[in-house]
Image 1 (cartoon, rainbow, N blue to C red):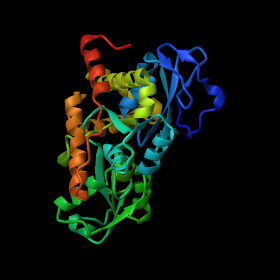
Image 2: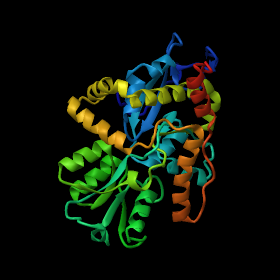
Image 3: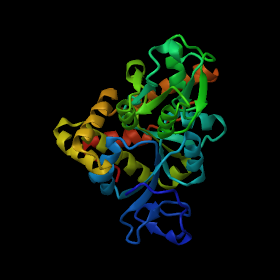
Image 4: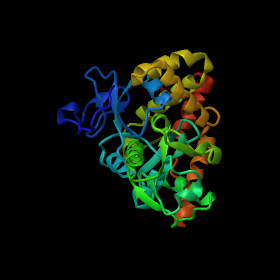
Amino acid sequence: MGVLAPAPLAPEAVTPELICGATSVRWGAPRRSAKCMTVTLRLNTFSRPSLLLAAQHQGFLEEEGVALEVIFAKGSRAQMEGLLAGQWELAHTNVDNVMKFRGQGYDGLFVFLVADRGIGQKLVVHPDIKGWDDLRDRAVGVDAPDSGYAFVVYELLDRHGLPWGSYEVKPLGATSYRLDGLRSGAVVAGLLSHEYEVSALDEGFTVIADTRDHFPQLAGVTGATTRSWANDNDELLHGYTRAVLAAARWTQDEANEDSLVELVARARRIPEAEAQRLLDLERAARTGGVPSADEAADSLRGFARLRGKATGMQPAECFNPRYMRAALEGARTGVTSR
């Protein structure tokens, strides 16, 4: 489905007593069609990587009885607040955003999915920036100063002789706003994901650092939700996890390359050459294939270490591997929990 603005569920969308298959539909639960064939889940995300497009358009979600409304995130704070308020059931996010809110007492948030490793972000700078020292006393754009990829930026700068306090931090919100900040001159540096990196390079901005060279094992596409929703919709969450991981495997299979390029071009409404360019950038950022649940846990701990270094407080574990373990075991044996 297309990208829609978040909207509250209409009261008539469900009834408290309606039971469809094994899943109880309660107030505040996802909408279900009258025939109980498909559930529409609302996903808040900063980007649409190829695995998400494949999950939507190659039948992986449909096979699980799931459709998506995709809502683009404006910033990490609004994304987490919306998830807690039930504006959307799922979020693709940086695990550090979950860690931040859990540290503020919202321990019902948790991560259930890591679909790949490699965060797919590059530190892009204004053309006037010729080296790291040119960033001293200049403004660097981040989503929020105390969560998300901000700690990745601080670590990159620290590793290149720019400790905290030697530059200005300017919170701008999601990636599109950071690119706007570069364009306007409000900042001279910021992390950008693939699709925005392409635009920035075409406009004359340059890459000063690739996170792949410094943090290859950090979690990439990461799924989060709330325990209250997961408890009421356990099989839906299993189905979503199965679909996304199956789509990730499909996108990484070289035999599907031509179909994948065509899919990305069609879904994004761009020429196939541009789709191939995006896929090449995405592939270059990735480390290995679909991770195991244990590898996923390790990739999340990398973010915990960055947060601990920056804040002096080590966050608690926030990953429930149960959904990944079931999906991966089902893929290995050919048996699912459905």
